[in-house]
Length: 128
Image (cartoon, rainbow, N blue to C red; front, side, top):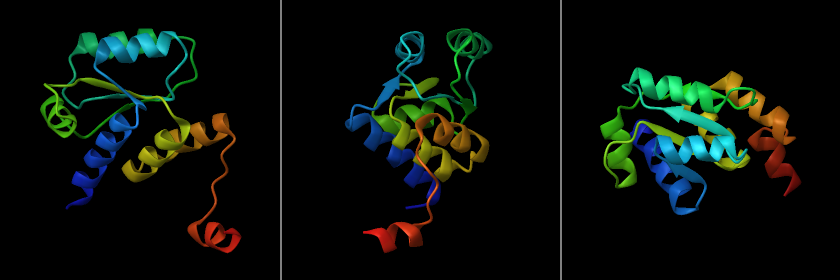
């Protein structure tokens, strides 16, 4: 499995864990209710979708990222139709996904908000 496939599979894991809102309407609704930690858009999301995402996050300290995947790729990974917007509902999953994707500024923002420190794997191994 390629790294890209692993990241898409990770989205599926989040979905199965109940930590992912799929689709623009569900993502924006979760944002308005203050439930989301990270909002993600497909690379080919329509201008209206991008505008809706920005409106849903107005006055909220929630990162918004554009993924390197198309709506079709995201939908296929989740067993759905095309998917232009996704929202992660859990800090741990959001931080881990940002790190896997190389979204360092967003990962740091999420760590700051959650209080989860950035420990190296070596540090975690020594404490267990």
